[in-house]
Image (cartoon, rainbow, N blue to C red; front, top):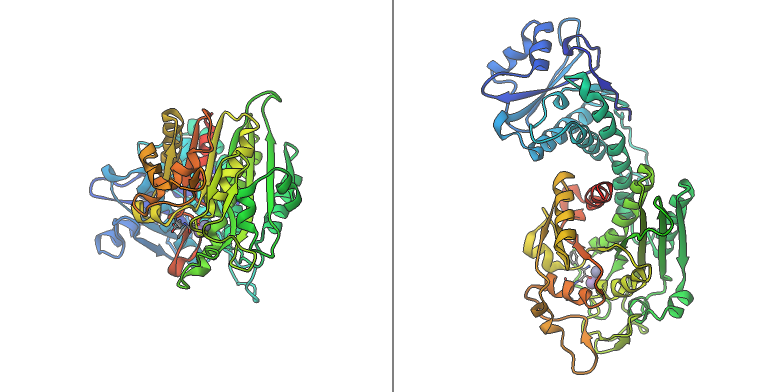
Length: 493
Ligand code: BES
Ligand code: MN
Ligand code: ZN
């Protein structure tokens, strides 16, 4: 999809469809006025007689627009001007893109970008337009036997009211395309079924990505290599599975050779049955999404490499299945983690923290500037904050604030939750250093407390994406969330 910046006067531009904002009360935008004029007052008439609405997200496609301007207009309700927040902007962009997609139009010019919310600078105006549109047009069809007969949008012009903004819009467009590419990759990995998206598949995808970018290098460790590293916790999770595990390591070198990297760890459970602590059957298929932390980290690496960021980033992805079998870990088994600490596995369904703790120990060997792990870690996080915010836990206020701000700007928001030591009280074990599972109360913070035991003084953050990594029901599918947040954070370092 092409995103040319359009600086000409609105009424004159030829396009299959002009996407025009409609605000409630007060005056309309210059684009509305100009297109209304070339279409001899049709837009005002539609608004007056109630066919078009200024309610936020309401769309009306006006076919065969009279006059010499655009062939059609898509009127998009934006609500009252003073309530037009960045979030609303994104909502109306989504509504507009869905309407264009349903209509099967091939090209359009978007005039939402020439009257954006005051709080958004031109760069984000364009970035959100690009990310939203590519997100709406994303489809996962590779496993449908008949190719869908879709008519893709090939060109979306982004209107720009003053020429001085064009440069910033262009920067937002190219960054937006890079972030959308990483997000789409994360969604593809998440959506692939667990018999396709195995640890070996994730490794192959990481290899393919590294081939595309000169600054990316990949290492893939097999079970024997994981044993040599003494990752007893990771190994205890994979031991019930026939499918072989992988430790995937991606190095992005965009900074000086001696510069400390930012380390990202992503939970890559390609299917979580719970193991011997077996999950109930309802919605168990959704546990194919239990590798969305891994997908988010790999997608972020794709975005970082496309953006050619001048920093070093290390990604460590432990990938395996959590299966019940005669060789599976029993509740009560005690394992020695790579850190040397011993863990009593009281619940084999608390497996994410087991694979992550060893991956984090491994990542810390590179003395990172920051360590950030991403995981669909706890159902408790979903109960606590639902599917709006990512749960953020950190031992470092500056890092936490940086990630919160990035999530806010990227409209991929996170909310900070506590990790105080009291949340570790229920992890006491009479037989090992501590247990992998404790009380149900505050379960997301208990899990974060478990992970914190593997971190030294390195600024660390844990992102629990259990509630946001995928959508259920009619829109079932991976969201790619946390790629925009993480990429925005890395872009602003
Ligand atoms: N992958 C799950 C967490 C999860 C559950 C994410 C539902 C999204 C939706 C994780 O491995 C898990 O099973 N966690 C347990 C931990 C408990 C046993 C301490 C949980 O949340 O129940
Ligand atoms: Mn589990
Ligand atoms: Zn899990």
